[in-house]
Length: 239
Image (cartoon, helix red, strand yellow):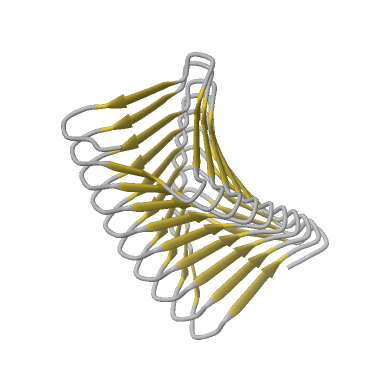
């Protein structure tokens, strides 16, 4: 789908991509998922967003990635999740953001990573969480930030790591928390910073570690707290 082509999934409409099926969105092509529309990517199905292609998930639209389904965002491809739109990554589903690909979560948009779902941010890929957008990592879900990948949490955006969810920052990956952004680590959630990975907390922003949540910093990993940034460790949280 390219050259300003448009695909809308709404009103309980359904699109399944599976068994090595492929959907490409590029060259200003647009896919909208809204009003309880549903897109499932599973069983080695593949969705590529590149070259200014755009995917919008809003108004209770839903995208599920599971069972080795794959979503790639690269080369200025864009995915927006807003207005109670939902993206679930589970059961070895995979989302890659690289090469200036961009994922925005805002306005009560929600991204869940669970049950061995995986999100990779690398090679100048960017994930923004703002305006009450929410990212949950739980139940052995995994988020990797590496190779100059970037995650920004700002403007009341929220990242929760719980129930054995895992966030790794390594190889010059960067996580910024600013402008009232919030990161919670609880219930055996784990954050690792290593190999020149960097976490910045500034401008009245908050990192909470509680209820057996764990933050590991090793191998030249770096945590910066500045400009009224705040780190709270409570209720058996561990640094």
